Every structure is written in structure tokens, then in C-alpha cells.
Amino acid sequence: MRQSTRDALTSAGFTVAAECTDLAETLAAVARWRPDVCVLDRELPGGGLAAIAALVVPGRQPKVIVVGGGDSPAEVRAARLAGATDCVPGTLDPERLAASVAAATRHTRRSKT
Image (cartoon, rainbow, N blue to C red; front, side, top):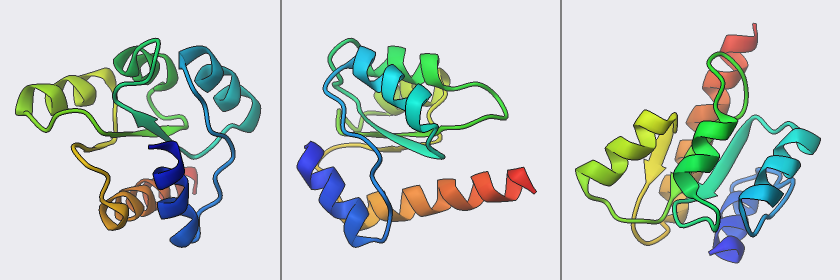
């Protein structure tokens, strides 16, 4: 999943600052790199929902996009309630992921001005 995500984002012109294997690595990488957008696997070891909740602070970065997991309304709602900006459930769709990151990036840039 990490390689597919990296390929999809770099092909769309985005820079991938870090690839993490669990919640602790993710929190450390976000603190170090301070990305505008963080793409998280819903099944991240340590807890995808816990990672979203730990990263999301109203009005600040990063925006969080959740990939993978089920596409049931309940799962999408849980990710949104935890603070995710967008959800790209199911099998990775590179075009949808790139569009979601682009939208989150545009929103981030508008809110900084």
C-alpha cells in the first residue's frame, strides 16, 4: 500500500516527505516534516482513527486523508468524525487520491492567506 500511494502521489507531482509503518512513526514524522497533507492507511498499526485524532487540530495542518479500509457509511463517518478531510476507501485509486490531496492542498493554501 505504501509503494502504491507513493507512486500515485509522486506521479501527480507531490512530494512524499515520509513513509511510516505505525502510529508512533507517523506522529514523529509529522512533527519533524510538518506536512500540509498526511495520507493515512485506515489500517495503520497503532490505530488509523487514533492517528487522525492525534494529528488533527482545528485550523492547523496537516489535513488528513484516509485510504483503504471499508467503504461502508459507518467507516467513512468514523474517519470524518475523527477529523479526516477526506476518505478514499477500498482499493487505492491513484487518480482519486491525487485529486483528494490536491483539493486538501488548495484548501490549506487558501486558509494561510
